[in-house]
Image (cartoon, rainbow, N blue to C red; front, side, top):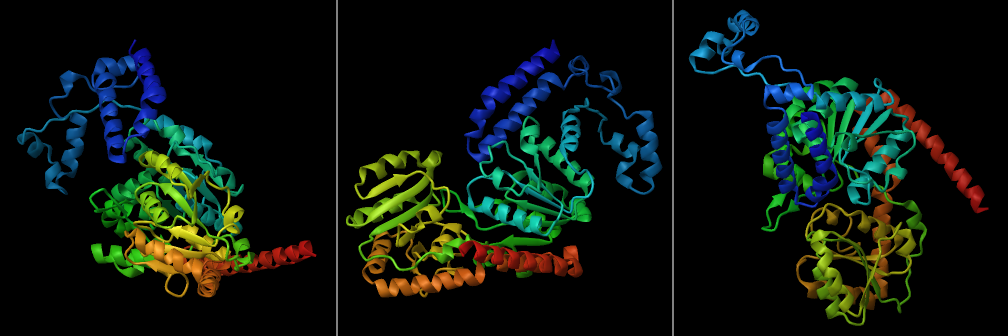
Length: 509
């Protein structure tokens, strides 16, 4: 009977409660899951009778729980000379009791299944942990790292810790093994998931563990970082802070980095501003960070820079959420009725009510997200970015590579790419009039805007090429892999690059 009720409650949670919980804000979602797991333990695991009915072993009955058992007392006494506080006589004099819990083997079952799914139980050089691989800046970084590692013939395991569908999973190189941790372990409590993931990492013993935006992996580093660092070199990627409704900085860097920093070998980021901000806040050395510029699609560099004077179309691309400030875009469009604004975006929960406002504005047209930036790049002269905070958005790099002129808020690490030479920076980034003036100047002075576009493209070529990305990561991982191996990898990559260049020229002929 207990087993039947347990399976019924688990089915209700998976098919009805979990979809609802996922729509809740982050902290509320985690608290709700924790409460449900506590309720599950209270109903099915807390009592000996129910645990035994479920088939879970119980080593001690209630009558034996009031004192320390003989075997444990003997073991504690043998160690008491080394540690005063584990003397059983001292413990009992303080009124403390021994109360073992019933064993719940769910985590063990999940761990065994995951180990069976791992293609190579021994021999992974590199484990990259991410929540998912779908459309987004951090996901693009994940794919770039995987492509780099695949070209270097590193044995890699990609662990995805969330259940969410990964729309870009087909972009992962075929040589990379993928473990869908989230799908297999989602029904465990957060603590149990953390325990299972840590056991996997300890068992697999990779030379490097790299976390890109996985909350579960951050919890492992924070709570078990000393153990993990003794086995593997730990790397994390961070790009910028988020901000709550009151303007206070939040995010993984604020929540986890202070306690996790001693166990992390390097913090990888895509801009120079964020390391300075975090180091000033927590007293970390700047040497803890490594700036690795994200490469862009180099085919964009071949597009013509010149745009016709009659083209008065402006592109805005991003999520409809507080960070990207779509309501600011609406105000800018009202100030420039003779300019067309084409919006490519995805509506998150907080931004769905803004779609109707866009549709009512005659010079704004909303499109579905594009499959690649190249599909829309030649249709526009200007890209508008209204972010309230950011690292260095990939959309700006793509726009600069394609020859567009960029009008953007001056926040985060954007000045690594856009300054007075390469675009139009809006310092008063909450003022729609400032954006409108910059767009007007851009559209009216073709000579100046074209010169800025040329300078921006040159900066992309210098900092955001694939070869620059490879060279930087070769430098970052030189101590991990050894310089001889890195030289061999670089030579192989150079040979492959030359072969690809010859093939491309032959195809052009």
